[in-house]
Image 1: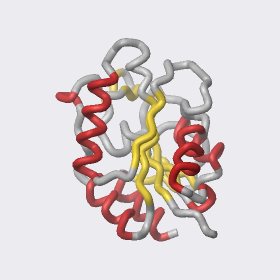
Image 2: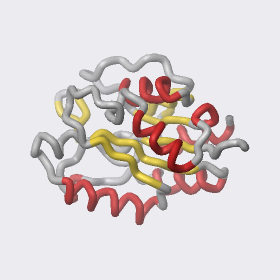
Image 3: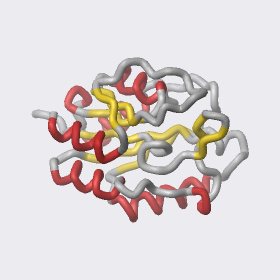
Image 4: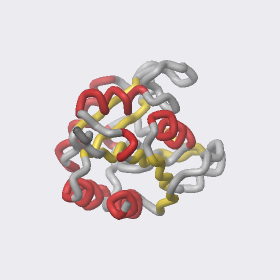
Length: 177
């Protein structure tokens, strides 16, 4: 039996507008800072129309550090689900710098979702905006798409299979493959 195909999506910088300070990207800490990119809804609908599952995989270490609460992150995800019609959201609340299996750049969130949903990772994609997303894609055996925001002070990501200008560009490339 052939597994299902998925597009795994990072949250901040791919579906939602990140906070950028001094050339580094950060997650929004409150609902008032939480903003979905305008083309995200169209992108997700096109992916779903093409038969892909759409699953968010996101590191949210600000809960562990006390900068925000799990309840606020859960509210953000409720908004994402309601607005975009996502199939699932996998979250690592592990602190920054930890090397747990589920925290990107490790592949745990992707492999957990693959087991849960019957996904063939070799026929799937990971869309992200940082090196951690590209490394997670490689570790899971997915093709990697970088939404390139050219962050000034983030580590340079390894080569991806495609560099996209935004989420819609990324999804259109995935669907065409």
